[in-house]
Amino acid sequence: MSKLFVSHASEDKDAFVRPLVAELKKHFEVWFDEFELNLGDSLRTKIDAGLHDCDFGVVVLSPSFFSKKWTVAEVNGLFALEDSNRKIILPIWYQVGEKEVRDFSPILADRRATVASKGIDRVVEDIRTAVEASERTHQVLSPDAGRRALNGMMQNLYSLELDDRVLQTEAGARLFRKSLSRIGDLVWSTLQSVNLPERKRFNLSKSLEHFQIQGPLRVCLNVIALNAAQHTVRDASVWVSFYLRASNFEDANLSQKLEEFFLRPTCAAEDRIAYRETPDSAVLSEEAFASHLVERLCLHITKRVKQQRVD
Image (cartoon, rainbow, N blue to C red):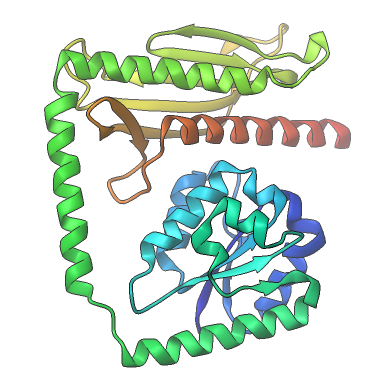
């Protein structure tokens, strides 16, 4: 049975994506974040695993989708899995037309798509037809696995050589610290774009190798550079933790850990640092890393709001 990865914006879940997934599960295995992610899981690692294991990617293109950075990363991950003989992206246009899709991605605009306005039953039937046609073609035209493996090897060797050359220098160490500082600035700038009541506002403390954000309801984000020497950051990592700060009446040691993960710096270019969780995971730009931090921080605050309403 073919496995589908469903890439979508969270705003589209209730009205379209959940009913769609319910029907797709009658015919396929489906990777859907509500099934696969638990609190505390590393979102990037789980998504990378889902992308790697899928046979096809159902991409729900919508106005909300176009505004997200993480959904863009998922589409790029799906494009990376395609080759000249096998197309695995199955687009669905949801409340968008050709102009909006073309502005987002000319390649996706030229890809045959189904339209949500047809109704979920028809959309599922279109997906089944596309999957069956692709699988028949794939049986005749097997992909050049050797060529893809060679290209992947060359990219990995180049990346390793670049890391060795840049990260083991004092200039590379400065580049890493500046990158971490920029990520803190990006996170802070995003959080300051909303107008919150004074008692619910975010607070920032920051240095070159560390930044901490205290949010509403005592939910905090802490980002620290580890093993960052003055002359090399080849063995450095970034520790990200979300925690519930102890109240003013509690011992500070009673803070509750909500989530943590580690990222390693890598060179996206001679003068640009990126980040990844494992050697096999997707590379995150500074902007994508910052966006992920904001997303997870907001998720934990939202869960805290729901808990307080229940209590």
